[in-house]
Length: 348
Ligand code: DGJ
Image (cartoon, rainbow, N blue to C red; front, side, top):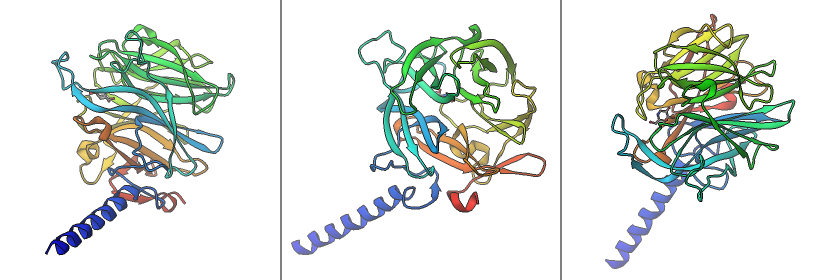
């Protein structure tokens, strides 16, 4: 009897570990992108790069994201919304040649654990880092949302590096154009000019702010967009001379309906087109929130929309949802739910 129980237990263990292995490696063993499951890096560790963005540089993709701490807690000092927090562990970087296999390059903007006053102290908020390359200064420039523990500071931080995979040197934070700055992204246009998109005025209005030639500061030329429409999580791309922006509504870590808009000029005017998502849970953005759109290098009309599926009570265990964008003849877009899709077959 004892032997039988032991044998059954071992069999159960074997089956369980095989099932687990299959789930975890789903994203690594093929050209398939499986949304919403745990993604592992090439060392077999969970990818920790939330609210991220991608830089393509000299044949390699670099994925920068929030390196979240292990424990999530609720910040009672913010009574107006469910302020779940985790230690801000800096900005991580992963590299890949194929957008499937990701090598951990390390934490490239390190937290400052010793100085309580530092923006980079883990008790503060570091979110939505984005990196662009400046062809003139030859610097990699990172902007990110830097905030106090209660999200009251509302600033943007800037860091630079000579190399894509760090270590980045932190230059400090500011309220660009003297207004609040929270959720944000960067966009570098074909002419080399770069722009900072950020939720401002208590997240009610989205600013588009031109950056100086070195990408380190705002020039002072900005526009106010989607006024009083409370848009967050901006992700910007360009196709056939038209600019696109994806964004979410403003409901903390909870999902809501996405929206996209199109413009002929980067500073606007933007025409709102509605929800780009279709299929299961499209009205809740598949229970996720936009963060970036990746133009796939060397392929025409190949763009991947990146989303975060937040797990608000266990933020490090949030998942990634990456889906291809399809274009209609008139330039409108569709992002339809697919639990798994083949990158090679989708973008021939
Ligand atoms: C929504 C934002 O898009 C996230 O980046 C984060 O700031 C959460 N709000 C916090 O609730």
